[in-house]
Every structure is written in C-alpha cells, then in structure tokens.
Image (cartoon, rainbow, N blue to C red):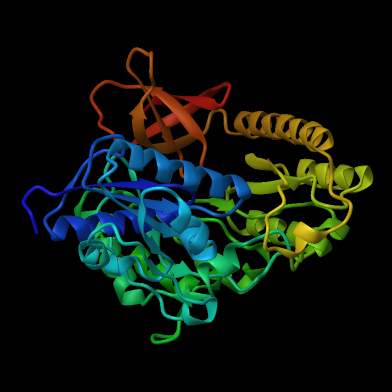
Length: 435
C-alpha cells in the first residue's frame, strides 16, 4: 500500500453505527492508513449509512454524493444499513465504488484495496445469512468521554413501522470474553463510563458461555477503571423482576433506563406490533422505581401512526404524563417502504402530526423541569464532557441518572468524574456546585 494513504469515515444514525465506525477506523489504522476529518480530501471515504427512516436514506445518499465531490477520484464505500436494505440504490449514487452490507465491515480494508479501475462491487447477504455476530473490536473513541460497547446485533421483533430487522438481520450476541476484553481496553484508555449498545440489547444471550445480559453487566462491573455502566435502549417486556433483582445492587450501574414506549395507547401499540400493553409498561416502571433509588426514565414516543385517532393520541399523552419521564424523544411517523405500516390505511396528515408532536414535546419539557426540581439539593457526581460554549469556566456533563449539568470549574479535564450538589434548574440543564 502507498505511504500516507488517507481515509475519512462518516457515521450516520445510531450508537451501534458509531461503535462499528470506530471498529473500521481501527482496521484502517492497523493497515497503515491515516485518518482524516470527513470534510477533507481523502483517498477513501467510508460512509456508515442509516435506513431507519426515509430521511435516513436521503441523508445517506446526500453524504455519499458530498464525499464524492470532495475527491471525485476517491474510492467511496457505502456501508451498513442503507447499503444492506437498498444495495442497488446505493450503487447508483454517483461515485460509489463499494456497497457493503452488515456483517461485512470486518473486511472493509481488504475490499477497498481490491477495488481497481473504479469498478463497483457489492457484498450484501440475505437476512437469513446474517447469523453470526461480526467481531469488530474498538479500543478508543476520539472526541468522546463515554465509550459505546456494542454487545449485540439484529432484531426479530418486526414492529410494523420498522425496517431494522431487515437491515440488521436476526438476533445474535457477542462472546462475553470479547466484551470484557474491550471494556478493559476502554478502561486502559481512560474511559470511566461504558454504554452498552445493541440493536435489541435486552435479547443479549451468549450461548457459548450461557451468559445473559445480567451476567454480562456483572462481569463488566468487575473491570477495574470502569466507574459507570449505562444501558442503551431497552425493550420493556424483557425486563423481568429477576433481572432487576440481579442488577439493582450494582453501584456502577447508572440508575437510568431508556425504555422504548412508542405509544401509551393499547390500540396503537397493537397496530405497531409492539408486544406489551401500557399496563405492562407501567408495572415495569413501578418495579424498577421500587427497587432502584433515584432512577430516571427516558423514552421514544411516536405520534401520527396510521389510524391514530384523537382519542388514541390523548390516551398516549395522558400515559406519558402519568409515567413522568426525564425526557422523551418525540418523532412523527414517516412511512417506510418495505414495512407493513407503509401500506396501512388511515395515514395521518402532516398538519395533525405536527400539532401532536408539538404537544408531546411541550409535555416532555414540563416533565423534565419537574424531574429536575425533584433533584435540587441532592449530592451526586458528574462525568465532565466539554466546556460550555460562550461561558466563563463552565463545563457540562451527565449525572449517573442522565441529568445534564453545568458546573463552574477550572482545573478538571473532560472525562473526569467530580462530586457536586444540584442547586437549580437552568432550562435544559441543572446547575451544580462543586463539593
């Protein structure tokens, strides 16, 4: 390989994609490539694409075209979910030389170097062939204070609006020994917090070693140097009393659960093919609150799903208010070709979706303020993430229960954990005083 060959890697989408991009970056570095920023001239551009919505597809196409314009003679690789679901469409984007689906990222360097004369190549397998977990180790994260630790891939839930089971393939889990090895690597590189990530994290089960998610968390808990373990997005119906009982006494486990809701209305959930009721969700939240002190909950809520009547929306709104989330990610349903919901009757008009979205977002802000107020006066710790722009000595960070905090401090560095007292609310943040 030529000396000083350069590569730029771009991530679109979720935390799992972030982790996989870092894994590919490490492969390129070991092969002698120099990593350059995504907006610079490079010999190779790797775009780790997203397909979760039609907008994800659009952004993927736009990014592929953009990097090609930076260097028309570069090798451009469309990698990941958009490439997996729509390989022909990805291949048609001007400048794309390589289309690489999921479970092939570990061969990215080899396949890039095989490309000659700008001939397009495609390596995309059917869903049923994505049966083995793709090992793509990561050692560090540039520009991050928290390390995303991917432990699982794939989903078998087939929610009626979601393309991801087709993009990611069936459920498969990472060997627990590889997970622990990576956690130790993060600790050696100075990371205090790891965030466990996966497409369907709660389904984690390492068959080779007969270890489930609770056992995995407990083993990571023993890694010296790791001070916090945060769980990524969780499916509520998999959180049993036994699971909560096993993890509740682990001091490193962050008391914050992102429990995906989507809707608080039984009828809407049925059409979504979500496999729980609001009552079951409520019971899980109550169980966790009973077992884990100072726990907070965040969630995802969809508005304007096909057939969502005004009454159904009001039920969902009331349920969210009852639960009292720290924050809700509110998004409007957008039809995704290739999913059952794409063909559903009673599609909701954009004006109604917008109005419902605004109401839900306003509720999210009210609940956040109420949650913040309940923590005033509490002592806690904060993982410092970055200086606050335009401030004099302020830094921002996160508490274990996911409260964003601003604190005035001069000597500490990003990535450090400090002790504070929460003293007031400042919009999207709380104010902390150094102890």
